[in-house]
Length: 211
Length: 342
Ligand code: SF4
Ligand code: SF4
Image 1 (tube, rainbow over the protein chains, first blue to last red):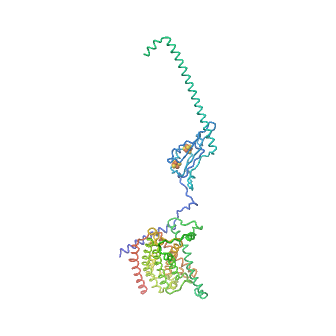
Image 2: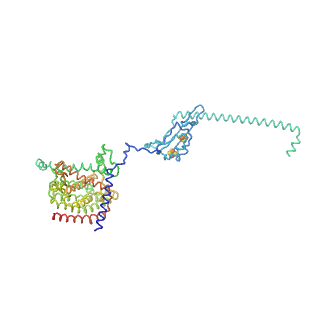
Image 3: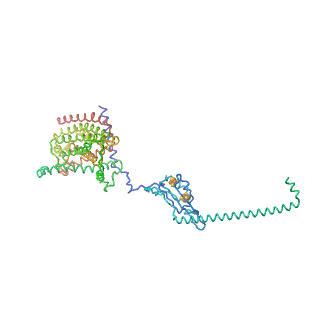
């Protein structure tokens, strides 16, 4: 009997304790964030969408090499001598046209590894996380700001210049080779003349030396 | 009002009398389903529905209703078609019919029968039957288990409910709920308390506790929601139902909850009597006080639902047969003695 009373006391006590807790929460504040209407402030350094400030990029390819999943795709074309691409805001000279700079955010795993190697701090994450797409290919972000015909022109120019350079180099090589050959010839001649002269003087000595 | 209408046109009188409780039930169900979700939300530090209709998602239940109307009415191939189709309506009819003897205000009661409480308890036991019907007709093991559990539970818990109702009737001396309410008018228990039955007699307080526990079980509320237990029986006897038939079950369940809460309000808390004596009296205020008392009990039921876990089947039966039934009968005898002595 006493046990039963004690048990009932414990039961009712725990029920009312529980109900006290719930009623306190009932009148307490809620934690819901009405998402599309309200947004949480992202913490500093949150990992989200990547952004490239293409004006500052020097095309060094360090970010692409750092990426563990190869989702950065960079194609650079060397600038020809007649154009000056200027300098980045950090003072580094730019020497490449960036004909392609694509980041596939579908593959990206937000590891942040590409951000740190950049010498000009131009690739970084922006607090933007609502970019779902119906088509996966829309998740490839194109950062290069060159027009397609510009790309073609730049490429052509660069090719031309490269060819020119190649030809120049070949020319130079040939010239060098010719010069070398000339020199050798002259030296040979000299040597021959010398040897002729010496053989005329004392050929017997020579033969002895050879033996 | 009743006599006046009957004198003009008996058929119209019947229709109006039938329509008033139905309107109350339907409006209440819409509000209560929304309210339950809001209460659940607030208790869990959430907000609950917020979108539909503007202010705090008040139109959520209406939107749900529209959705349910559009749903396909699926009947399993191996189900017993007639019983399967009929069960939800029977369930709703049972809880709706019981509202006939509830005195909503001093001017309105559906039917002024002398055996009001008896009729109410008899009609609500049809609920058990419809639950078994639904469980059996679905031809699904979850449904059948749910139906069986429900039958066992409701039959068992009807005993303490009836015993406690009997305790009240013993004090009140009438089975007519209108008379029971009328005799609770006034405000002079201990000088200031209203003359409600719960304040009349210490054993009626324990009777109310037993009564409340039993109606939780009768209306399948947590912690006694074993017939529906979503986590183990996938909603029990409702598993195979969809669309409007399922909505009927839902409606009947909420109606049952309201019915038993209102019964509790009549039996223990003075029905439509104002807690301040004559102040704020009259039929309309009576209706207000009555619904307020009923809805407060409904709120406590919801509050308990979001607080307590569910009992096991054997614990449920243990509570009923070896605790509540003996206690309620002891209580009945003690009340009778108290009435004889004082
Ligand atoms: S965050 Fe990581 S995965 Fe994404 S692009 Fe940078 S290095 Fe690659
Ligand atoms: S590391 Fe920076 S500068 Fe180099 S290619 Fe990537 S973005 Fe451009």
